[in-house]
Image (cartoon, rainbow over all chains, first blue to last red; front, side):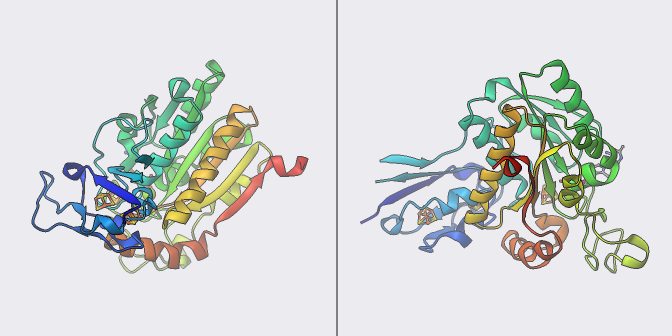
Length: 71
Length: 249
Ligand SMILES: Cc1ncc(C[n+]2csc(CCOP(=O)(O)OP(=O)(O)O)c2C)c(N)n1
Ligand code: SF4
Ligand code: SF4
Ligand code: SF4
Ligand SMILES: [Mg+2]
């Protein structure tokens, strides 16, 4: 059961990967099937069920585009 | 569901021009969150520098003034003295603060101006394409030091936090970084403390934040964080260098 839920403002994502690197559950990846209007592959979560809502990803996002909710 | 993290109201709804993974963005957010949490967004005036953060005036959701290169502390001094009830801060890079603006920051600290400076040290001139800064590490490559900074003619890095801490006018000086979520939280506490002391009228406060420049360091954003941890922190140790509230305790 997920205790957290994250959303990304994907059209603002620069694909820097800092959120990917700090997720303790390793559930964030850069989605190569999407290219946003900036030309980057935006971050997304693969298996939201595993999210613990720790907000590590949001704390490291230089573009402040991650919202984290806790159940 | 309760929101545990969302974009701060202290930031405008504007995309930044910063390179992917540049930690200028994290530092902006920490200042924005602090101003929002202290409830002072409506009475804050920030002063932006020349450097990559030159457009900071578009990103902070408070009044902003642009200053000539290195002169932000002088401009902030004028603003604060005319409007002492406002919260006034400068946001400056190492080229801005520790090279062309060394005089302005030193004298603002000496006078004990009741302002807060956010000093973003990325050991390079980011905006202009990666020239050597006074903070560049010995051996670190820059476009103007292609074989690495040579101590024999370019000297060694200037340690601004340590230097300003010797001045009586400095109320609070701390060096932090933003290379991990834990460090980001520590940096936030430091920034908040600096602004709180300004609100109490205690004098000059500066938080030096070790920051990355993935583009000019030639590293990926994640590798840049590692490089900072391994190479910059030994030369620029983290910690509190001045805290006038400690004397009273
Ligand atoms: C009077 C003057 N001299 C030189 C410059 C060129 N210049 C622009 S930004 C900069 C240094 C920027 O480096 P830093 O302050 O470290 O900011 P960063 O881009 O690394 O965040 C220089 C030398 C200028 N704009 N004006
Ligand atoms: S909140 Fe924590 S667990 Fe969930 S995606 Fe972000 S870093 Fe991963
Ligand atoms: S940290 Fe932010 S900008 Fe970077 S990849 Fe993750 S969501 Fe995108
Ligand atoms: S040049 Fe360096 S400091 Fe400037 S935005 Fe790019 S990464 Fe950041
Ligand atoms: Mg710099």
